Length: 346
Image 1 (cartoon, helix red, strand yellow):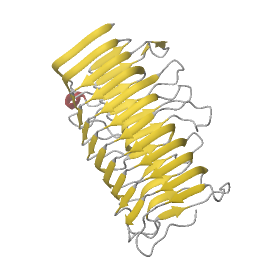
Image 2 (cartoon, rainbow, N blue to C red):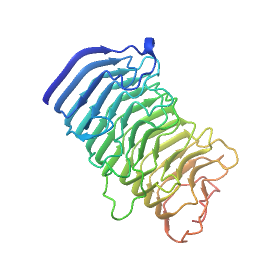
Image 3 (cartoon, rainbow, N blue to C red):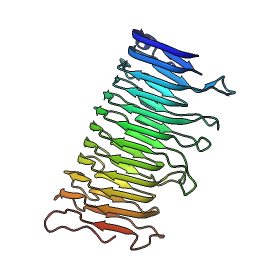
Image 4 (cartoon, rainbow, N blue to C red):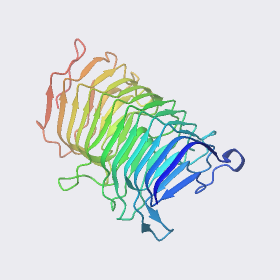
């Protein structure tokens, strides 16, 4: 089907009466293109508010093309955080979610407000995806507020932009932005062309969790008052990052419970440039703005970062070198440190 418009509607579910019911979606679309959903209120969904599926049938799957989807100026109100996701996307191209508001979405055992998550079938594709200028308030979940979970059999997402979003009072256990492609990238892995920029988050668990991915730019974001740590390349066999830049981000009062603002566990070609750390950690043992883990880290650059706002931290960087660490592979240039402090030898 083509050229579908949903505008100026209120679609209301019965989650307060029924509680959580998986697959009780308010709107489900599959095999569609040219869809415009504007100024629609999705309220009280028991499962997903909007499901965009690139398949037909269950459990046997048949591929369905889904493309050219715009969701703009919509409200997704889960009412009681007893839902699945506000928007679920299993595949598609040219999908834009813009200027939408998400509040009271997602129970603790479900992913989060926006979930890009194909199942393990090789026909799925995720290309040219945009989540821009959206507002997330008082949401939950166990994966992330904007999440990409891609099985190894599915190609990594391509051309992704997450920009200008606002995150507040997240009470889940994931990140405001989370991504995993369930494989450790290498030279043969396609570049993802993913940009995470100009987002503002406050009062949650952490800003971003990038378990795995290649060619990711994270820039000019503001992360404030988080209990946990953002991280790159979580230390497990199917994780690791490659060719990642974090540039111009600011971490303020992050790691209040865990003691760390940002951790790098495993990766190749990671650059932290112009990043500002202010009042991070909790002052306890092992507290620091940055942790470099003992898994394999190659071609790391620390350039012109500002550590001056952390005079009380036991360390500016905590470094745990693994057995395969090669001295001299880290570039450290132009960093600003508090008086009397220095960065450790890397």
